[in-house]
Amino acid sequence: MSCLEMTPRQRVRRTLSHQEPDRVPFDLSSTQVTGISNTAYVNLRRQLGMPALEPDTMDVAQQVCVPHEDLMQRFQVDTRGLFPRISTNWNIDLRDEGDAWAFVDEWHCKYRMPKEDGLYFSLCVSPLDGTVLTNDVIDSLGWPEPDDPRRWAGLRERAVTLREAGYAVVMRGLCAGILEMACRLRPMDQMMMDLALGEAAALHLLAKIAELKARFWEAALDDLGDVLDVVVEADDYGTQQSMLVSPDMYRRLFKPLQAELFDIIRKRAPDGFIFFHSCGNVRALIPDFVEIGVDILNPVHVRAAGMEPAALKRDFGRDICFWGGGVDTQGVLPSGTPEQVREDVKRNVAALAPGGGYIFNTVHNIQADVPPENILAMWEALREAGVYR
Image (cartoon, rainbow, N blue to C red):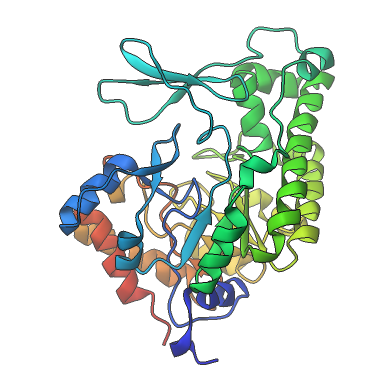
């Protein structure tokens, strides 16, 4: 097939097969980690002279939205996301606490967002805080039902419609990653000490979270596995400089659980690509991710140590695809000039795009303080630099 005839789905699947399509595919908001904040979205629509529409919030905690179809068409977005009903978008009872809005999710975690200048909800109460962690305490917590079919009701029909329209279909999972969920259920300082001390109950908690994830994917993919192009999982292991856990701890505790989870996904979505999100410096773990079946690494945290785009492409570009890293969202996108944004986009695309294996997105979500002029500069630079010749 000529590259000139490509649909968005063909473009995405070709590049994920490590071949060059006609242009670098563009993702906006197909996942909860590649999206745009409600505030930035409203500002962008205003800048473009588009009708004012209420954001369709896909993740209440992060306050990120799915753009309306008119803007998706305007930006020629190649992907479309499916968002199952989970703790960040389902059965959320917002409570007025005077100076803040608050809610408790299905994992018994409490979140608050200040009414004045609040941009997103932050975790403030963890259900396993201050307890002596035992298997019995963990088992009696009152866990969500991950295989409740209401979670993905109607998504098959949505996926079929999107495929018929020519888009690549992406679906997120039940919750945050195994480590990240453990650090929400039990405050991070306590959980990290539990892991460092080798507490058996901490391992039981990790296994419980992995079990719930597996139950979700087993049931959901029995219904949807044949209509998905990309399946999304995540866990954050990196910091700006190093890692939250050592490579040895990752390989002993987390890698086996993820390998089992990815095997479940692969068997039920054999034509789908596995997308794995992990912020920060995770360079040391990329060979492990490849070994257990990860096809796509996101977000390509270009400002973190060890995550220089050209070096990542050189060392791992034959084995894994990169999704994100198109522009720095910590400094350049919110604070740079439009010209600095263009330069950053061109530099990153030049490093990551050759040979295929690259989907353009920012480094994590577009935050509320990003000027709409910079979003437009980003997109214009991609249209210029992202064409394969």
